[in-house]
Length: 216
Length: 424
Image 1 (cartoon, chains in turn green, red):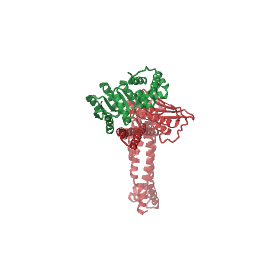
Image 2 (spheres, rainbow over the protein chains, first blue to last red):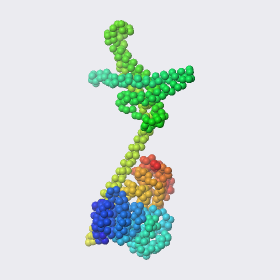
Image 3 (cartoon, rainbow over the protein chains, first blue to last red):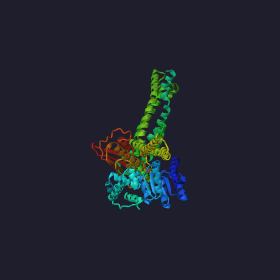
Image 4 (cartoon, rainbow over the protein chains, first blue to last red):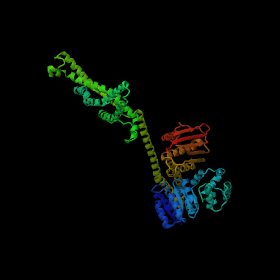
């Protein structure tokens, strides 16, 4: 798989590149701002762009805006946003246009090398990777009664599910059996009046639509 | 003390500025007396009016003339004050610039103008009397002290009385010398009185001075607040671009070491694992600290977006409801963010609450922020918090003229209500 990275901190850029190369990605370009990123995506048409949210010149949400442009103009390039803090509002912007091939993670997740590489692969393949913190924020946003009906364990499962994990991923994270996870998920769908779906990102879509984020 | 310095002190010092001051006192006379003829004219017309009620048309003239002359006299008096005191007399507030009719009429209704009229028509003539008295004292002092010169110099046919070189002349000389010493003191006292009168009637009134001072203070306080906010933002940026990136990079390298160095001895692997975990914890801790300063998203997307992040980070469920038709000023936003973020931190630390509620809404020109929890209550406003406790919150709210109240009966619930004024 081919990747470009946009990150203004040189130290971190080197680190992410090392992690991605170790995971078998081919790095076509390394840039430090949104303008350079769009040019690099135009030139290389990578499978995924790993993008820092805060970049020059404004250091606010340049990365988010660049990501929206990429998802619109180059649908075959997935985008994974990295940020020191995840903001639910940016996640909403990102997911409102398209819920496949997008990810939004805290920068420190890069340090968990294997999990990070797995998330990049998932997003590049058209899946979703949302940081547990974003999901928690999205849940804060939405004070709906059905959510209050979930047990704490079901809530944990829902958060992991919204993060784009598969049943086996959730089972490993919570150290329970896969059949237990499947039971929780069924119970969540029942409580939230959601039609049961099988594909991973369709589940995410359903959850996000419920959270009032995705319009599609 | 040497004799010369003593002599200087006794003889020189009182006279050092006496001449200059006396000249200024004398210069005040025509200015002080300028309105007196108009006065007399007014009195004359009034008397005529009493005798023959037909002459109404003349009556307003002296009054109008007084009003016309007043600003000119004031300019003159200001110059004299500057010479007397060595600094400009502060000006009273002028209602709007321009020289059209409306501003002229508005000027007529200002108290400043009537205070000026009062100065020129009443205080002026009274001061003139004192001026004359002081000048007379000087004249008498000079003549009496030099009586022997007059006796010697004046031809006999010019004299009022022929004293001759008698002992009387000695007394007169002594009296004159005494008056000479008194002169500078009297002049000094009069100059102080003149300055006082000018300040009271020609300068800004006490109310105006206070209003101006309050306006200045409000402006400088706003400047200080903005500077503090800017500083917080700068620190946040610096930490974000510096230390935070370095820590993440360190954690990434440790993570890489962990996953790539497969054939490490057990001890080394443990050390690397430990360091990796420590680095991640340090990042989380620093992130929480820095986010409390001034999150970038607050500037970018406003209170609602920033507060959801605060709520999501807490271990208890928090409901956030922000209802703002438009964004308040950055300063108010920063204070509101700080209040909610600190209040929620306190809830988690002290209240043993199971849930909290945050509402932010705008009612007219007030931003209403309410933070409630279902905890144990008994929150104490006086408890020391080193600027982050309730007292610190109250201070930060007061800095933008907001009101802060905290109701926290023992047993709960605790409700913190903050009202922040925002300009429409």
